[in-house]
Image 1 (cartoon, rainbow, N blue to C red):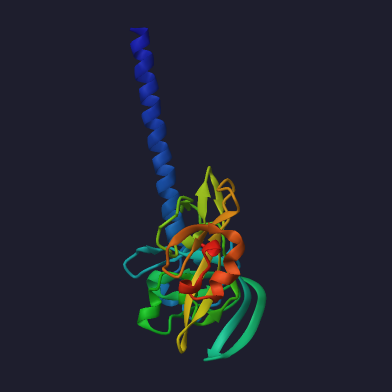
Image 2: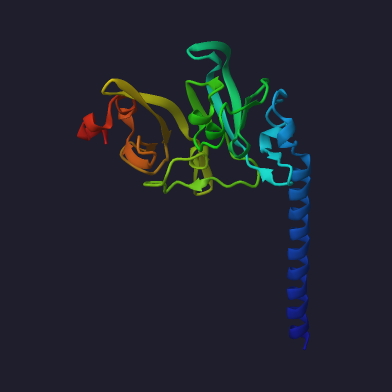
Length: 239
């Protein structure tokens, strides 16, 4: 009988502990959601500092749905005024994308809406950053409660989720991206080249996105050649 009572007590304690944990997580999630700004009130409002402005974590739609944010460090931040005319803003700045409502901003700059309905819901960072320009983007750690994808990304599509970096053995490895282009007959074709250096892959290999918008395992030393050359002309050593 004493043993049975002990088992009952332990099980009851576990149930109570699980209930309390669930309540804490639920309340914390509710607090985070309640702190998010309204999506339809953000355009034109200046974005505050990362870690201080709740807008870095997303926004709430009119229906009360939370929109996820995607955060990066931008090098050579510029504002695109008209085609081929840009204004320099900062050497380094954090930027945040809210693709599901077509908004983006840079720290200390106003939120801007995508210039077209089509661009509002694009799923890669450089494609979304029509108003601002960056030479390079480096993913920042995902917001609390959002887990990075596993680093087994070979043949996985490139999107905002995978450009947030990847996780292996509990450690998050950032993704670094830049715009690339190569001559295609009488025009240039653009694509986003993203790379992730993951220790333990061996032989200097990195995860890298290709023009087909898939992640590959490739030799890391030929990124520049792949960025500026048509894929049909790549040397075997570059692959």
